[in-house]
Length: 486
Figure 1 (tube, rainbow, N blue to C red):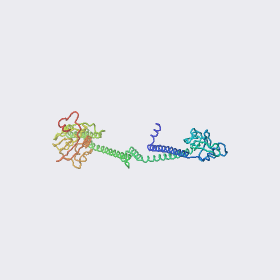
Figure 2 (figure 1 turned 45 degrees about the vertical axis):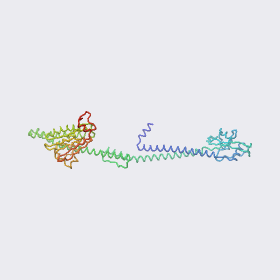
Figure 3 (figure 1 turned 90 degrees about the vertical axis):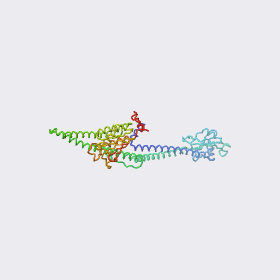
Figure 4 (figure 1 turned 90 degrees about the horizontal axis):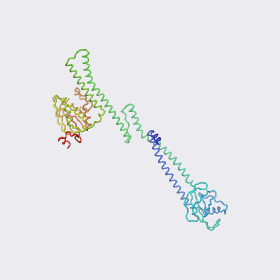
C-alpha cells in the first residue's frame, strides 16, 4: 500500500485531483449500479413468483398428460406454453411432458397431493441442469376419459426457468458496467479539466515566483479575480512583492543616503590629512594655529563619522525591526540620566526639569538613547545661553527649546532617514537621530511629534503608555508612584 500511495503523491496536483474525482465517481457509480442490479433482480423475482402463483394449467391438458403417463394413449401432449408442467401422484411418481426436463420431487410437493393448500415456491435444478423456479398446487380429477379411478388426487408442479431473470440481469450488468465506465472516464476528463482551470492561477503564481527568483523583478503582479482562496493567495503574493520592492527601494535609498552622508566628512578628512602629510613630506611646517585648527577639524570629522557609523549600525542591526526584551522602567530616572549627558554637551545652556514619576515598558538602553537624541537636537538648535525646558507628566514628555524652530513645510520630513533641514546642514549630525527616536518610541507603544512652540522654538512631545505595575524592586514606591497607579 505504501508503494501506490508514494506513486500517487509523486503525481502533479492536477493529476491527483483528476484521479480523486474519477475515484469518487467510480465509487458512486459502482454503488448505484450494484443497488440498481439488486433492486431489479428483486423486482424480477417477485414478478416471476407472482406469475407462477397466478398460473393454472387447463384441465384438458392435465387429462391428456395423465393419460399419456398411464400409457392409455400414445398421443404425446406438447409442452405447455411458457411453463414446465409436471404431475405428481400420491406414490411420488412424476410425469412430465415429453421434451420437458423432469423436476425433483420434494416433501413439500408430496404434502400438496391430497391436500388443500399449495406448496411454497422453491428453486430446483431440473434433469437437464437448468435452474427452475417451481410452484406446486393440488388438483382433483374425476372420472373421465382415460381415468381408471372415479377420483384422483394429484399435484401439479409448474416451473419457469431462472434464465428468464438471469439473462436480463446479465444484460443489465453489462449495460451498467458500460455506462459506469463511460461515466468514470468522463468524470476523470472533467476532473482534469476542472483541475487545470482551477489551478491556472496557481500556475500563474508559480511562474511569477520563478520569474522573481530568476530575474529579481519585484514589479510582477498577478491579476486577482474573485474572492476565493486562490484570489487571497494572489493578493498575498502581490502584497509580498510590493513590500519586498519597497524594502529594496528603501535599502537602496539607505545605501545611497549613507554614501552621500559619508562622502562629505570623508572628503574633508582626506583633505586635512593630505595637508598634514604634504607638510611632513615637503618639510614646510604649518603654523601652530593652523595645525591646531586642522587637528580639531580632523577630530570633529572623526567624531562625526563615528556617530554616523553608530547610527547606521543601529538601523541595520538584525533586531532593529523588533524591540528587545521590554522591561518596566522608570521613565523619570532615564530622563534624568539623559539630562546629565545633555548638560555636559551644552554647559552654557539652562536646562530646567519637572519630572513626575512614570513607569513604562521599554528597552532601557534604546529608550535612553532616544531621549538623548531629542535633547541633543534641543541643545544643538538652542541659542547661546538659551533655555531648554523638560517636563514629564503622566507619560507625556515635553522637550521645548527656544531656537529658530522648524518651518511648517519641513515638519513632515523630520523623521525620515538622513533628512536634514537646509538650515541645519552645516551643523554636525547624520540625519538619523529622529528616525531612531521614532522607531524606539513606536516599539514601546508610544508616539512622538514635533510642533512649533508658542513664542518661537520647537516642542518635541513623546507620549508613552504607563506600565501595568511598578518595577518589582520597588523603585519609585513613594507617594508620587502611588498617585500614578491609583
